[in-house]
Image (cartoon, rainbow, N blue to C red; front, side, top):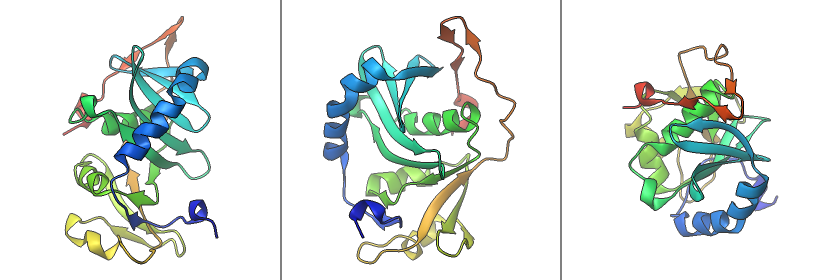
Length: 188
């Protein structure tokens, strides 16, 4: 089995420098070839394949991947200059409201930073789902060690759901520009 085929939740190291390099390698392609699919506040959202990037003019603010097959959000990175602004939460709400993804599954490896971010996603109903058995357990920050592992692989993945029905939220287009979404009501 190849490393990229392992789909379990693992406590990982800080991948910030690796993710930043990945962003630098791809930002020109994303900016040049990415399709403008909407705006979050004053940030432009571009899609290129499974990668979604957030831009402030020509500055890469954040990126993630989003797989259509299982709504898996992975490859998460936020520019250090834009952290502490709940950028990742806003991206998740964009996926839910604009792309109509009611359930999102977070990727297989979470750094310690991501584990802290996950604890703060209070407006989402969080639960653990076992990808082998489909068993679902409620999320509790006090029991993270039951679902994460540093040494052994587990089948538990974090699932984010919402209580609202956002299927009625169309992607409004006013000519060549999009309505700028503001998710401040959904953030704590």
